Image 1 (cartoon, helix red, strand yellow):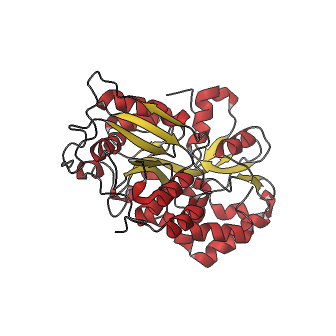
Image 2 (tube, one colour):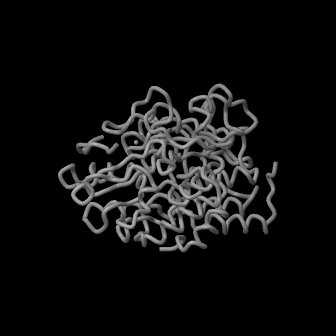
Image 3 (spheres, helix red, strand yellow):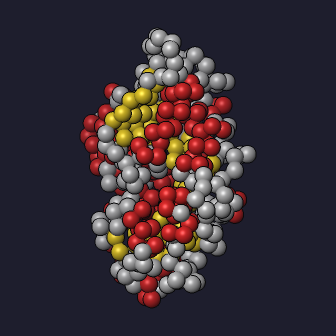
Length: 379
C-alpha cells in the first residue's frame, strides 16, 4: 500500500544515584530527536495581564480539570524541535495563561540530562519525540502519575502502563521510494535483504526512530532473529544519513532508491514545495514490524515546582486543540478519537502495527550494543 501524493495542504525510584544516572545518560545520549532539533533555550510568558502569583500547590486535585487554577511558568525539556512546536507552546500559553520556558535538544540527550539531574532537575515536563526516552525516565521513577482525565483521552496502548507518560501524536515507519526506479516497492523489511537493493537503501543510524525500530525488532522477533536481520541488512551496504529528512531528499533526488523514515517527512516536503516537486512516495507496511507505530509524548516530573501547570500542559497536548495542531503542523496521527488525520493518510485502523508494549522500547542500551556489534550504529 503506498500513499497518494498530497496537495500542498494543511499527521519508586525517585532518587537515582549519580553513577546510575550517568550510565543511563550514556545509554540514551545518541538517541536523536526531531531532525531540526535545537539545543538552545527559549521562553514564553503567559498571554495574560494577570500578575504571576507563583506556582500552585502541586497537591491540588487535577483529576477533573488539570488546567483549573493553573498559573505561573513551567520549564519544558523539549525533544520536539523548535521549528515544529514553538507555535504550540505559544498557543498553549494564550489558551491557559501558563508561561513556558523551553530547553530544546535531542530526546535522548534530554532524557540523559534528567536522569543525571534526578530530583534536582529544573524540568517540569519532558516532551519527547520517542517512547523509548520516556520509558527510560519512567523506569528511573522520576515521573508522577498523570491526571485520569488526561489519560482517558488516549487509548491505553499509546501510554505508559503505569500512567506516568502519555502519547500525544503518532508516527508510522515507512519505506519512502522513488517510483521511477522502484515500480513495485517492498512490502516488508525482509524484502530489503534482497541483494538487488545493495547500496540503494538510506537509513539514519543515530536517529531515535531507527533505534526504536531496531528495539521493536528485538522485542517482536527476539534477540537472535533481530541480530540475523541486522547483519543481513548491514551486508547489503545501506547508505547512512544523519537525518530522516536527508533520506527523503536523497530518494526524491534519485540518489538512492529506498529509505527507512517516518511517514510525515514526505508530507512536510509536499506542503513546503508543492506536489509537483515531489516524486517520492511512501510505502506503508501493515502487519510488518517495519511498520512500527511509535509516539511522541510527555510526562510530568515528580519533583516539578509547578505540578499543576505541568499537568495542564500535558492535558493540552491531548485536547482537541492540541491534536489538531499535530494534524495540521506535522502531519502526524492524532491519538484522540474523533480527530481526523491529515487528508491522504491511510486510516489509523488500517496500519495494523506489530503488537508490543511501547514501554519496552526503553531498552535502548541493548539495542545500541547490538547495532554497534553489527556495524550499524554510526554513519
